[in-house]
Length: 92
Image 1 (tube, rainbow, N blue to C red):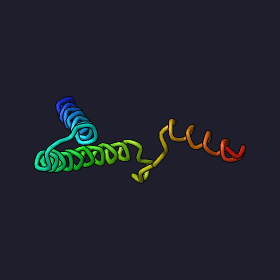
Image 2: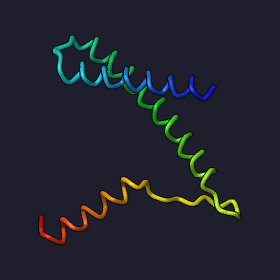
Image 3: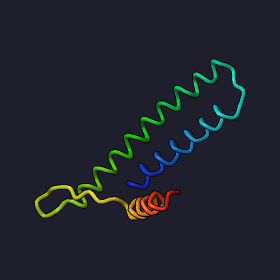
């Protein structure tokens, strides 16, 4: 069953990407642009809601022995912060 929810998110995200591409790259009539924009906002809210749900699940999984969420940055974020710190120290 979780696969179906993931599939819904993936489909919505792909559709949102297509809408953004069309709005940025095509000369569309105002009415069509507005309809695409409204659809994009709706899809954006749906995707954001799904991401928040996943974030809450991750926090529950990472809860400590007292049930308090343990929030840790993803490894990629941690490495990126270290690279940014090193670059700023070098004056880049």
